[in-house]
Image 1: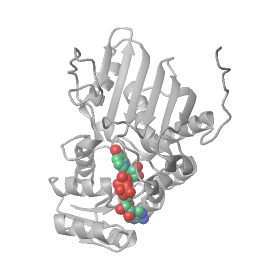
Image 2 (image 1 turned 45 degrees about the horizontal axis):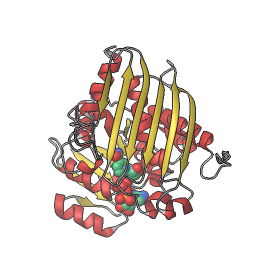
Image 3 (image 1 turned 135 degrees about the vertical axis):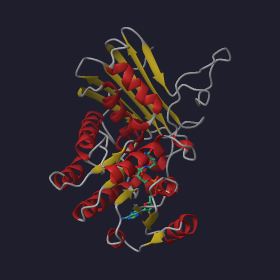
Image 4 (image 1 turned 30 degrees about the vertical axis):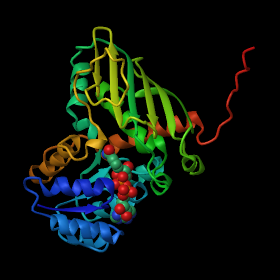
Length: 333
Ligand SMILES: NC(=O)c1ccc[n+]([C@@H]2O[C@H](COP(=O)([O-])OP(=O)(O)OC[C@H]3O[C@@H](n4cnc5c(N)ncnc54)[C@H](O)[C@@H]3O)[C@@H](O)[C@H]2O)c1
């Protein structure tokens, strides 16, 4: 199989390395406006360089992996769909609902499969949590908490085209809450603020945000995201039901300063900083390659991703980012 990769930044170069090692992938064709990134991929993986997405799509690829900056996703997806080439595109589909809808309309009826890369759905810990919920093992849920804390903010150039913290970072939490519980959200409250990098505020974004969601069975879900976590990348999910509770991401590398008496050993969760290890990132590309080879179904399509984008828009409306009047409580005497 010949796979195209559009975008060779942080995640694109990692995907190139994974794809180069997958069974059934014979060759890679790559493109990125940054010449040095292309040169590295040709040297390391013997990839064929092309000077534009159009040239890549004309190079006889069986499927394309889109790992370009978020603002480029819609045009690149649409170009691949027009060419009849199956797509794996990194999350999110686009920076907002309007652009995502445009993509969805083009995909529907095209006969071309478009898979959106929400890697947590391929993580063993999150999959175990979903099984525990859907089998009834936890009983009726009452509370879900989903956390994504990045070790340090991405650079301004990334923030500026990311769509904002909920669409860029929180999108994993919104997706995983929907997927693990199998429920949809009926009510939202959201807020956010800036305590860290000044350029994030100047870009009209917040560095820390939370959303409070009511699911259609009455479960309350709390989402907590930040660009600042001094101890490292923290991805956790906790589910509490009437019969039992389960947590994902509490393991011996949990970046939290625990009480000396506490030892945490439970199911491992995904950590982005493990980009070198075999992980959910590998499994999702294996699933894409299997789809190209044998037509096995993909787990998340553009329509499912659009539902998450709509939910995020509701949260933005609720929060009134970037600036909103705040009720200031009178200081206590
Ligand atoms: N699933 C995850 O956990 C995860 C992790 C990181 C990034 N991402 C997503 O992957 C995407 C890229 O993130 P990143 O961290 O690698 O960013 P990055 O800034 O490191 O890299 C983006 C690359 O895209 C290239 N690019 C821009 N426009 C392009 C175009 N039209 N055609 C080809 N290449 C183009 C840029 O030159 C750059 O090399 C973002 O959408 C991000 O949300 C997902």
